[in-house]
Amino acid sequence: MSAETVVFGTVFMDCKGFAAYRYDPLGRNVGSVRFIHGGVGRNVAEDMAAIGAKVSFVSSVDGNGLGIEVLNRLKDEGIDVTHVRRAASSGMGLWLAVMDQNGDLAASISQMPDLSIMEEIVRE
Image 1 (cartoon, helix red, strand yellow):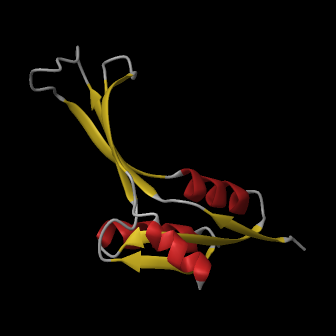
Image 2 (cartoon, rainbow, N blue to C red; image 1 turned 90 degrees about the vertical axis):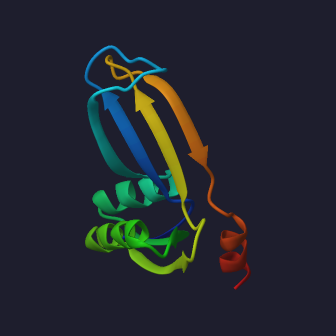
């Protein structure tokens, strides 16, 4: 029987653009764009569940479709999301990353989640 593991951490939604040709920072670039579930806490919870640990995740997500998608994936992985709060906004972070033609990071913007939501969860 696995030990109970509680993971506290953030959720991010990574929006990554991959240039198909030479990346031009001032021009339009053809390529592909993908949304990838991220965040160190979310990653750790998912990895631990993958090796058979019984995991409870404590975090927050946005109450929109992206947040619900993250919750559903975590549930599908067998992770208890009872303590993940859905917030109207800023419940999870966003990372916009542009990768050049070699797959190297060319530019990025990171939006941190509102960590006061996590403070409330811990106080409760």
